[in-house]
Length: 147
Image (cartoon, rainbow, N blue to C red; front, side, top):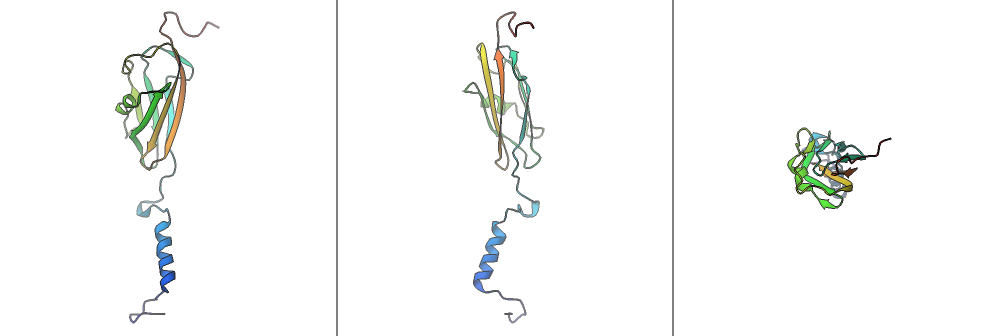
């Protein structure tokens, strides 16, 4: 069927179906596909299994080539204790670097094995998690036994 101007007319049901299909696709619009890839997390410091003092430094590199890193989404715990705020303050969205200076976590950590759990999302909501095991040893001469 054609209108008086010569335009092709579609039956109402088919026109509605085509409109719905064009709105439901996840093509991201003019800017391209939606970001469905989570960030990549690399815990640089402390190294896995390392011995550290009561107030260790932390350095984490987050890369996200899609929508970008979202620092306010950081959730960080050390053996269950929430330390998110320290990591959020040390996060640079442009570079993806997250650093916590030694001494920033006050009071310091007690001796013993610890687990850092670090979560962050990108601006599209994709979340990634990394963990790191380390041991706090504040005793002089502490650390791993000689081999």
